[in-house]
Image 1 (cartoon, rainbow, N blue to C red):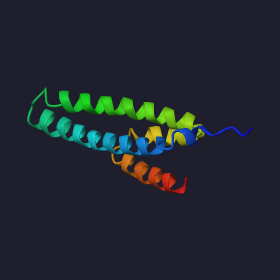
Image 2 (image 1 turned 90 degrees about the vertical axis):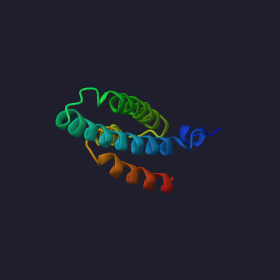
Image 3 (image 1 turned 180 degrees about the vertical axis):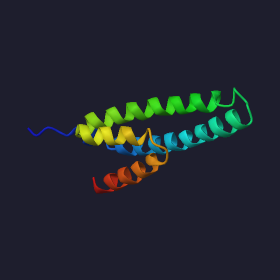
Length: 107
Protein backbone atom coordinates (compact mmCIF):
# COMPACT_ATOMS: atom_id res chain seq x y z
CA UNK A 1 0.00 0.00 0.00
CA UNK A 2 1.64 3.29 -1.08
CA UNK A 3 2.16 5.90 1.57
CA UNK A 4 0.90 9.39 1.01
CA UNK A 5 3.40 12.18 1.09
CA UNK A 6 2.78 14.56 3.93
CA UNK A 7 2.44 17.39 1.39
CA UNK A 8 -0.74 15.73 0.14
CA UNK A 9 -2.25 16.11 3.59
CA UNK A 10 -1.14 19.76 3.99
CA UNK A 11 -1.21 21.25 0.48
CA UNK A 12 -1.08 24.83 1.70
CA UNK A 13 2.14 24.69 3.72
CA UNK A 14 4.13 26.64 1.09
CA UNK A 15 1.28 29.14 0.68
CA UNK A 16 1.31 29.78 4.42
CA UNK A 17 5.11 30.18 4.44
CA UNK A 18 4.90 32.53 1.46
CA UNK A 19 2.29 34.77 3.08
CA UNK A 20 4.09 34.86 6.42
CA UNK A 21 7.35 35.65 4.61
CA UNK A 22 5.68 38.58 2.88
CA UNK A 23 4.20 39.92 6.13
CA UNK A 24 7.51 39.43 7.95
CA UNK A 25 9.40 41.29 5.21
CA UNK A 26 7.01 44.23 5.38
CA UNK A 27 7.19 44.32 9.18
CA UNK A 28 11.00 44.28 8.99
CA UNK A 29 11.02 47.34 6.73
CA UNK A 30 8.51 49.12 8.97
CA UNK A 31 10.67 48.29 12.00
CA UNK A 32 13.76 49.66 10.26
CA UNK A 33 11.89 52.86 9.42
CA UNK A 34 10.78 53.37 13.02
CA UNK A 35 14.20 52.42 14.38
CA UNK A 36 16.07 54.81 12.10
CA UNK A 37 13.71 57.73 11.71
CA UNK A 38 11.57 57.89 14.82
CA UNK A 39 14.04 56.55 17.37
CA UNK A 40 17.35 57.89 16.09
CA UNK A 41 16.36 61.11 14.32
CA UNK A 42 13.31 62.19 16.32
CA UNK A 43 14.59 60.73 19.59
CA UNK A 44 11.43 58.77 20.46
CA UNK A 45 12.80 55.82 22.45
CA UNK A 46 9.42 54.02 22.56
CA UNK A 47 8.93 54.22 18.78
CA UNK A 48 10.10 50.66 18.11
CA UNK A 49 8.19 48.93 20.89
CA UNK A 50 5.02 48.03 18.96
CA UNK A 51 6.59 47.44 15.51
CA UNK A 52 9.33 45.41 17.19
CA UNK A 53 6.83 43.17 18.93
CA UNK A 54 4.79 42.66 15.76
CA UNK A 55 7.92 41.83 13.79
CA UNK A 56 9.08 39.46 16.52
CA UNK A 57 5.80 37.54 16.46
CA UNK A 58 5.87 37.33 12.65
CA UNK A 59 9.50 36.16 12.72
CA UNK A 60 8.62 33.35 15.14
CA UNK A 61 5.64 32.40 12.96
CA UNK A 62 7.95 32.40 9.92
CA UNK A 63 10.39 30.07 11.70
CA UNK A 64 7.56 27.71 12.70
CA UNK A 65 6.11 27.72 9.17
CA UNK A 66 9.59 27.09 7.75
CA UNK A 67 10.06 24.10 10.06
CA UNK A 68 6.66 22.81 9.00
CA UNK A 69 7.54 23.08 5.30
CA UNK A 70 10.93 21.49 5.98
CA UNK A 71 9.22 18.42 7.45
CA UNK A 72 6.12 18.44 5.24
CA UNK A 73 7.88 18.95 1.90
CA UNK A 74 11.12 17.21 2.91
CA UNK A 75 13.24 20.19 1.93
CA UNK A 76 17.01 19.86 2.04
CA UNK A 77 18.90 21.73 4.73
CA UNK A 78 20.44 24.12 2.19
CA UNK A 79 17.03 25.23 0.99
CA UNK A 80 15.84 25.77 4.56
CA UNK A 81 19.01 27.71 5.41
CA UNK A 82 18.52 29.92 2.32
CA UNK A 83 14.92 30.68 3.33
CA UNK A 84 16.03 31.49 6.88
CA UNK A 85 18.81 33.79 5.67
CA UNK A 86 16.28 35.58 3.46
CA UNK A 87 14.32 36.45 6.58
CA UNK A 88 17.37 38.26 8.01
CA UNK A 89 18.16 40.51 5.04
CA UNK A 90 15.99 43.54 4.17
CA UNK A 91 14.04 43.05 0.90
CA UNK A 92 15.14 39.38 0.64
CA UNK A 93 11.75 38.08 1.90
CA UNK A 94 10.17 39.53 -1.25
CA UNK A 95 12.61 37.55 -3.40
CA UNK A 96 11.84 34.45 -1.32
CA UNK A 97 8.11 35.05 -1.76
CA UNK A 98 8.50 35.00 -5.55
CA UNK A 99 10.56 31.78 -5.38
CA UNK A 100 7.96 30.15 -3.13
CA UNK A 101 5.14 31.25 -5.43
CA UNK A 102 6.90 29.60 -8.38
CA UNK A 103 7.40 26.41 -6.37
CA UNK A 104 3.78 26.51 -5.27
CA UNK A 105 2.62 26.69 -8.89
CA UNK A 106 4.90 23.83 -9.95
CA UNK A 107 3.62 21.46 -7.27
